[in-house]
Amino acid sequence: MKKITFIIILFLFSQISAQQKITVWPKGEMPNSKGLKLNTIEEKEGRITQIQEAELFAFLPAKEERKPMAVIVIPGGGYRHLTYDLGGYSYAKWLNTLGISAFVLNYRLPTSPDLKQREIGPLQDIQAAIKLIRKNAVQYGISPDQIGVLGTSAGGHLAAMVSNISTDYTELKGDWQTISTVPNFAILVSPVIDLGEFAHKGSRDNLLGENASQQKISEYSMQNRVTEKTPPTILFHAQNDNAVPVINSMLYYEAMIKNKVKGALFIFPKGEHSIGITNKTELTDNWKKVCADWLKTISNK
Image 1 (cartoon, helix red, strand yellow):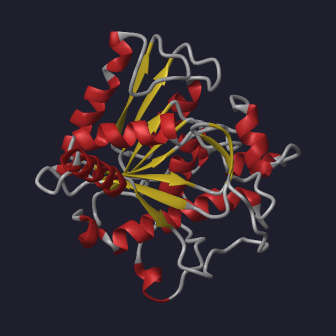
Image 2 (cartoon, rainbow, N blue to C red; image 1 turned 180 degrees about the vertical axis):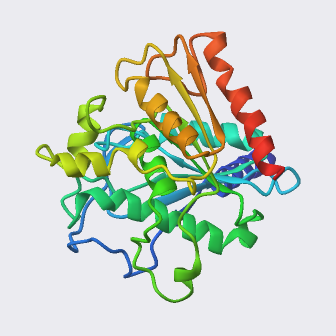
């Protein structure tokens, strides 16, 4: 009986250590807050609609298998909720099988009543997360120069934002100011990119408000923000995606070509808005192998 108990304790410890919870902001330094005290609201298992402040969940491979690369996984949810399990933990566990450290980010949603300026709240959180992981890279056994982002759906929009908006909105002082907020590479899966004609309306309204100006819509349509400094990016989308039209990825990749940004775009005939770790067709499921091979080319540079 004692032996069984010991095994259970070991198992629980390994699970806890594999999913270490990290507070993103140093105490008292979270910007863009009205100071409200909010409870975490989980509308159903695996889907959060409100959090107090940003959190990271670390998934680290065994030290013997750990590569220098790390990826921050940004869940989607239309900027209304966070699909942290299906759109977060599942990707993190897959990345671990490649020897890549993963950190799932639960960010403040723009619909939060605590935010002073809704559209930059999520961006501030991912920027701070990148700074935090780079600052503590040695502790995690990774390289500060091999930190990427993987975003799905609206999380893909946030991944594109942090890839292209170099202005530091974190307001962190001291040695934090010397740490870049821009990732070294990006993986965008069924991403929201355009907030105009081809927008996912829910994502646009939740991020910018229902009466956003054309100027604001253009500013936050990420195909308009790509420059030669945009990090290498790979995109995956399904042609039959009825939630986020495939032209979102096409517009982004076109902007990448114009600005000579290295990367690739893969469009699958099927997959709808659910390209993930488990897919309905073998062809669509190949995105994982393609992505893994692409990451090898990134890590070799």
